[in-house]
Image 1 (spheres, rainbow, N blue to C red):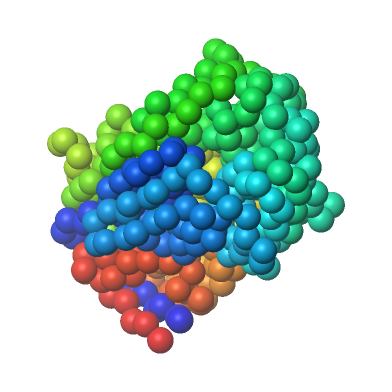
Image 2 (image 1 turned 30 degrees about the vertical axis):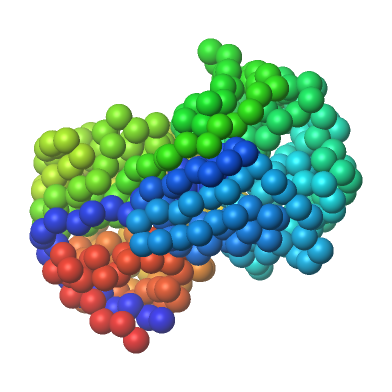
Length: 421
């Protein structure tokens, strides 16, 4: 599908979808809790469907209605065929650890893009804890052999490749015989995502303890308890609505937890630094168009914000510098290259450095954008199209279904001039 966007203003109210990250974690915790849990307001997207399908193949009972999912967990069984993770990196990493608790062999496969994203350090860490896992030279597919092979103990992994490696081990650690001490050999990046994991475990009566510098984690043997868990609104998805309002109009974004552990809540700080008009009330954030100014910001802990911040900086007054960009090459796309290419196609001025990205604000023009099947690239440049002269065409625009299936409809409801082909 192609989406064609014309310069236009947005105005109105929009409810954000539920958090993708919390939906994944709630599913895993519910599956590991013996008994029946209810997940209220889960996100229905390509990524959450990938996790749900695999859990059901492994014996987890999941029934769904329009507002909640009921999960019968605690009894796992092996599955003879491939467990397909689609393009969901979260599914691949979390389910790699999950499958070490299954009494039998498992094989996790991935889509084309995900097959190029690393999983080796996680496999190494799980093997240090007694598992028998193999990968394709550090990449999918991943095979897990043996009967409930995870025993526990001490594991050492890097913290600067993917926080999902840490989250995956923490989620299964309570069910090991010995408990787990996890030590990071490099500083942890994307810390808020690990805090989200610990927060999710807490709701299911499990405690993971982090050292003050988050370089060590301690998890004793314990049991997940079934519960009712409500998924909060997704700050990652809200980012694009907030950016659209800051560039072109006024939007009341509702359904957000302003005390959230989600990393991408930092977008509010970024918008304030840039001079956006912001007000809030309860679970609502109101953003109004303003003349934005360039900023200097580090996104090491919030890598998913990079595309949205980049398009904001592209039209802001002056120079912006975004630090902490090195890991962006290993996202759904080479997100650094995809953003640079998109900005240049629309008249942006950029300079790529080793771990930073420079943007000179200017007037942008419409262009044809290949998001490389990356949902965040598609949404970001869809927003930039609203503030650019001429028409902007987003190729493969259906890729937003990975996290925000209703994105284009929401933008239309807010007044965006959009045509779909």
